[in-house]
Image (cartoon, rainbow, N blue to C red):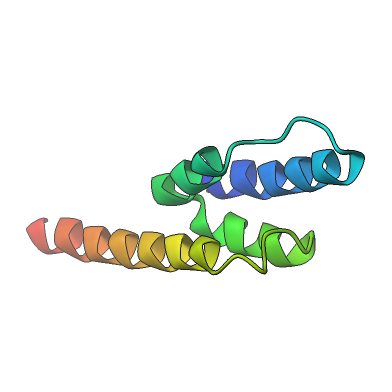
Length: 80
């Protein structure tokens, strides 16, 4: 939950910086937060702020993150 809230805010902050022509958040950082579990907030942030929606690799990273976390969830659940 915390990673999603963080990534949502990062998309808003990056959009604001982009509009002002200022230094931006590296794409690798956005991808990392998605992989750390923030993919729901990342997807929401992309569409809420209309930011990075034309870059297919961002949607790909979010989709891969979601699948990896689903697999991890079922593996952990199956072990207990």
